[in-house]
View 1 (cartoon, rainbow, N blue to C red):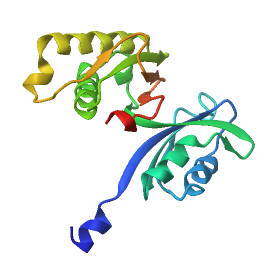
View 2 (cartoon, rainbow, N blue to C red; view 1 turned 45 degrees about the vertical axis):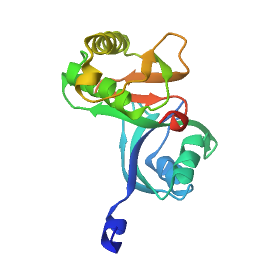
View 3 (cartoon, rainbow, N blue to C red; view 1 turned 90 degrees about the vertical axis):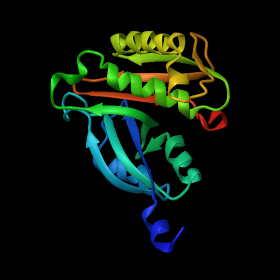
Length: 189
């Protein structure tokens, strides 16, 4: 890899930050920068009135340890926070998130199937996204039965189960859908 390629290859991810207390953009910046990462962008989910506690941030991280430290953060400015690494998300100003979207959910199923190398059962939970959870579960079952993974060259070792080892959560708001794993997945990929 050339020096130029090394400079341009950056580790970038999205995080979902929530709290029971009102969070500010400065709080999000503090969480990211105090863990030696860089804030690329930050967006409040909703407005100060409708959702004063949920944010999405795009961050650049130098290494996995720094990202892990960001995700482990539980306090900022005397506020309790929860930080999750986003797996896939939709942000929209339209009604696109009202009903489950098969292309989006199919992307999730196929990319999880391709990502995991160690056999694991995943339980799917939701926060205000029951329809999305049901549709995702149905799509997943259809793809396993139809051999869609084999057709795409994916050696699928993942299954869904109510008591699975990993919890995959779907969160729905008025104008967003966010998905993330509640536990670290590094041992399975």
